[in-house]
Image 1 (cartoon, one colour):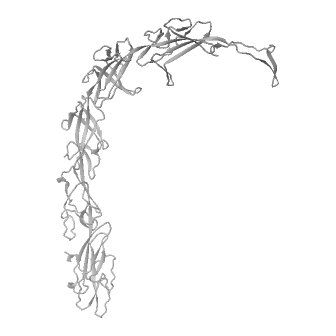
Image 2 (tube, rainbow, N blue to C red; image 1 turned 45 degrees about the vertical axis):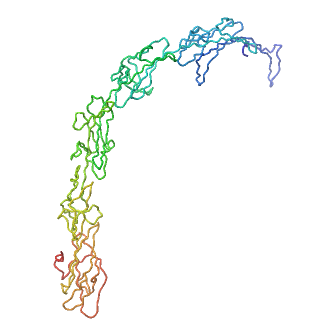
Image 3 (tube, helix red, strand yellow; image 1 turned 90 degrees about the vertical axis):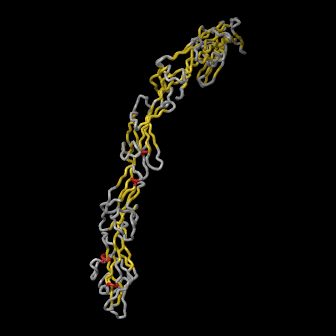
Length: 589
């Protein structure tokens, strides 16, 4: 019961006349009924008014006041709270000095040691009659007396010194601040301690200066590093940074809480240099430049750097349809390369004034660039069946005139086939190119081109042909009345060729008046296989040699009957039979 004390010590005796004996569930029992008797006590309370501050609970809530209490015996006139009883509140921009009896006090009656206790301990007395002490007395409905003393937190403004770090074109740097009691007049960032460091592409961070345009720092730094705990870049000061609360050039605000004094410092940068290789693609109608830069920037005292190049880093070293990359050279018209292939290392050196240029941007950052040109070649390849094919012709970095290539003066060999010339596709049967005197004319008066203009890699395919001769033998008749011999040519398309001749329309005569029945491949035939105006299919020899077919006149005595077999043969050629000319081709033009 609040405000009361329950007496201690109680014994139950079965022989006591106040007891009642009996049994419970067959077990002997003794029951004594007692009534609580209370001893009245009193309560002393210490109310702490945080006077503008708050106490922050770990759960997230806040309180502006807090009360501690103690329940004690009635005979006591006062109670002293321990030095650690009062709560320690916080207030932005202020430091806690302690607690005082009055709200407006600037000096505490109970001083906070800044760690865990107050001095002296706080006594709450029901006999306190000091008019400056805020004592209140009350009685609960149960008659418990309460004596409460209210004390007020005493605050003093803090003094904050801040370094406003202007990155001056670099990455953002957080300000650095130090907070002191109001009596402190200056702050120092000592040499050897760290400070926030900025980064800027193409520059070295030297430190800080009070002038935005400074080229040398007032406060140099060394050993820039990445601090994993703060996730920022920091560097070590090599000189102290000190300023006072009255110093010129410092922004002072003594009316704020905390009182602030801010010194602005500007990052000082030293421009650096980088190295680069620019390669012009040097092919096509509008060749592009592709530049690869060194992975880091260097101090300007560094005069050379090595840059690794490949097609992933420099597209000029990739592919270009119809051309072969040879490498790179210093000049666009080079016929030989200084760097072979599409993967190589290049040393860029400022001493190479013939090929290297140095440019400086508006911030003083230098770029040392070596200009190269991709060198390409085009090839003329000869391919196809046969042997003795011409060698591949390669022209490196050709001019317009050098792209015009004369067809090789080579006559390849393929069994007994005749070489007809060169075509630009393997499935073409009509040649388009050949060197004069190095092909077999088809007899059609066509003139093949003796040069070809290379717009890229080009392949020429050998075209082969086979000669066919169809001759006529009067076979006892008048040779002057037979059709003339015929020549024909067929180009080869992967398999053996054939040719269909039209059988001559002329009708031969016989001096003995025999009747002409037609023509046959068999000189002893008695029936004709082919008739004037008809056709005959001739299959070529598999080795490509000249195929000569002779048709023999078939004669019959004049009996009034005619025998002729109109069937057209398509089997292999029949070479010279009896009565044929020694060389039928001699009659051909």
